[in-house]
Image 1 (tube, rainbow, N blue to C red):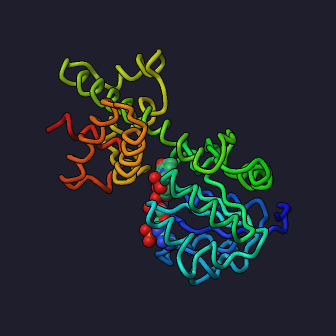
Image 2: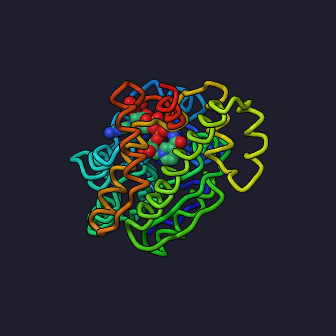
Length: 293
Ligand code: NAP
């Protein structure tokens, strides 16, 4: 397996809300950076700073020692990793592949297996911390994979996050991320209900947030997302449609494990309803719209 050093060639595929900031930190740390994204224009700012554009995921793989992906959905991950011109087919033996997309645990296991057959190391490393965590390089990174691959990838991961934990073998990072999303699902329902209640009770929601945002209810969903709700800011830091994808994966895994999760199911139902009304590309805080109808 490759050892990561400052001249390690890093590839980054998926330059959206999260990936553009994360790739920026890799470039700023001095690694030679190869990039690809489905929409070319999202690479422009990085290319202007010295990143090199490639026309396909395979071309990135062919010239990189480490490849990081931050895509949208499991089907994107499957295509980029396991497609004919994908990362597994085109990476040189010894390369390290790091998928930071929130994706399916079973797919992460399949990728790790196929990568191993080609002499590659693949880890799943989804993140938490939102657009702000990506911008500030303060993401929590939950890793699934071998000890050896984890330690090899660590110097690069440390450029994007501060809380980086190996959770177990392939797929364990994605399972941990599902725990994270399950907690957030019921929390954001509570945040929206608390703020809707404050409004109906004739309180000033900003003043309410000053009190409860510093008490036992405080946290990212209340303080950051609640703050955005009160500013009428429903722009996406995290797309509602991506959260629905995560809740679907978590519910499927829970069903497979015969675990009943009514809080998770309720959140999914409310979000599905809002997405059907056209809010899928809003931020997750737009759940508040449900209570303002
Ligand atoms: P995003 O803005 O949609 O970024 C995804 C990027 O991947 C897009 O730029 C997209 O291209 C690109 N992409 C998708 N499929 C591709 C393919 N086959 N080949 C090349 N590029 C492809 O989403 P995001 O908010 O950055 O989130 C990325 C992932 O992280 C998602 O799985 C999300 O659930 C997860 N996540 C997000 C947050 C958050 O707060 N935003 C936090 C934690 C985890 P286009 O530009 O053409 O769409």
